[in-house]
Image (cartoon, rainbow, N blue to C red):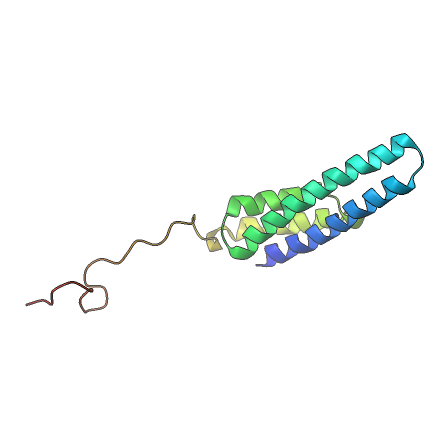
Length: 128
């Protein structure tokens, strides 16, 4: 849960950075710098979206590997003053320590069999 919140904050920071880079590319008059800002903004936007996907998986408690990948993408998406990178590192550490808290896969639990609660299951004859 904590890692998911850290990744959401990292997403917001890197998303704001991507928007700022797109705006800077529109303002800068030199073609080379405008193009560089636009490409950097596009890469940062892509990394921030992947960070958000990892954050959603971390918040839901499923898909530990996807949450780990989201933390790595948060590290790569520098964000404002590299705070996104710092939050990604902390989220990665928290995720590594909380692996057991994540649910395994999306498969449902197997149905109970036999005498579970001391009574009979529906459709089962009572003991004689």
